[in-house]
Length: 300
View 1 (cartoon, rainbow, N blue to C red):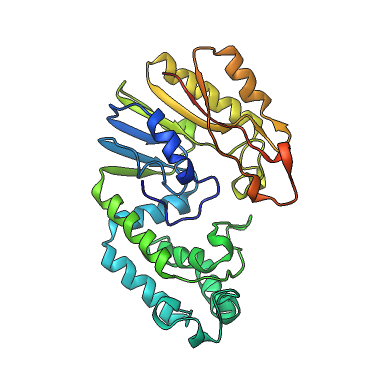
View 2: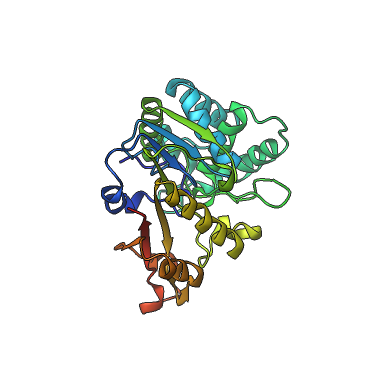
């Protein structure tokens, strides 16, 4: 199992030990319909993988990692860090920057990070360099997240870490895996992804309707889209194409009624309840309401 170097909200790495055994064994083409950081697509066993996500910046980063050699990627990242005088703790240590591990290097990097962010936000052409700059921004920003405002500008503040040894190892393993599999990338609305062949397997991990996350900001997912996805999956079923859907039935006292009703009206689908919750993601909630009923729904 390979963990994505992108700390993508809703990433499934921690759930892979439970999800992967529920997948079919004979997959020709694996379609990762909402691939996010790519945790699942890089860990599944198949002859081919299609990574799809409507977030073109995420797909651009993954495609760049696939197209360039690992050596070129690391040289470019180090060059960007050096050019903007950002910290390099893995080489020089914290004391070199008058910082420590507890407080991190955010105070040292603040102005350099702002220059990098401003330069990136002024770029017009989305080349490999654009996506490498974006990756470095993600590395140095708060919680290593990806977020753009309504004007299309990257708008996260500085974080406390840099391109440390752990992050380098994660990126290295991920690039190596991408280079070792047969994969393609697309950035389409899920309804535009055409599926053919009964040996194709579709995995859908959409934004969760009843949770609050960066991908649900600015109207990113709606009840109408939730219903459209169910229609899409129903069509796959009528064509004997296997699918698995990740979602949550309940979270922090809320219930996904649309999903619940879809399951009631489709008793042929199997709902697997997974042993995982996000109670540690919000210290203001406690007890029963903090537990999410994470599920994997399959049509086989």
